[in-house]
Length: 471
Image (cartoon, rainbow, N blue to C red; front, side):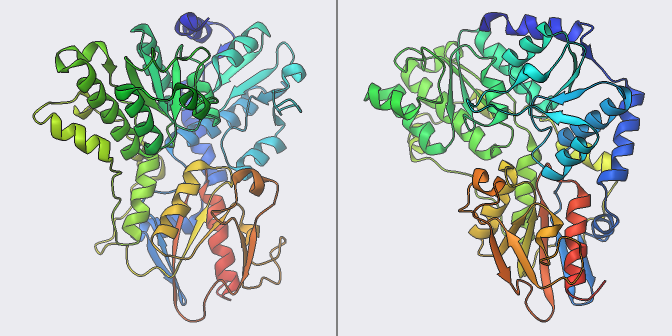
């Protein structure tokens, strides 16, 4: 019953099954994480203004990179769970984060992740009463939480507070009887969790899809085509002729901030046209669910290339805006945004920002992160968009052609943009390139996805130095 999800979650959080770490425990866990996730080389580059030259190699580090605060918190909680429950079986309903190295480390500590059966459904049969179950950083569905409560397990909830804030907004939307429009990917684990809290929902991935829906909202259209187009991205019983007249827009936190904001404004202006500004509060509700971590990592990439992020545009939005000159949108009201960067700086310590911009000519770009990481893939897209040769790797062993670190050659194995995450996770569609490091002085741009610890990125840079004969 989707009408009781808010009450159920509150009751679960107040129960003895829901374990909370105290502040002292969390401070200790976050501090301990630095010993397994930090990198002296990355710290040096950061403190040197995000730029450092070693021999004929210059590293330029993006000013926002690697672990976001929500991911760092989730991983710290997972490690602390192992310490606090030394004799318990510990399971994760999913990988804690989208990084294979981190998940392998947790696996080595005896934390196992539930796998999907041949029918695509998770096998909860291995979980027994009294076991400890971790909910991942991107959350778990309300149905999984209900199952685990009935199973009488101990729950450690590592869900990112930014994700939980999205869920709270979905509840407000539902309380008003509005449909939740979710900007995200319908099969992404975070969106699967978010839509489980909604009554009526529609998942929209792109601006093109948003424009399609808005045109249907305003003018009607081919209902059969609409239902086919969004067959996997809508709630059971969804009717576009009924459920688009009152909406709120929420988002998957790894989506672009600019796109989410424009989609929200597009729906608000469309509903103003249909029902008038005097009645908009009965048809549209705005939320502040934007997490800045994804956008900041992308903005830092553009800065590294001496260019800027261009906000998305919509011809339909421009037309509606022209009709509604002088109207102030709910969507445009400035609300205090959660700042991931502030939390990350507190964790990593202050960095010295270069007096001269870190941007300049970047010869190649190394992008480090899990092959199934959505936000890391976006970073690769930016490099390709700017015409910079870029290589997406998940492990340092992808560099040098040697897993044991000996006899390293000037070769890299990487995931090209055309290869899907599903293929790459099976080691399919990866490409090897000989002599990826050109001769002579070279400037290498460095960044990493929000689920990537500095240890992995730092080890990749050490391999480059070894290949170059500088270590």
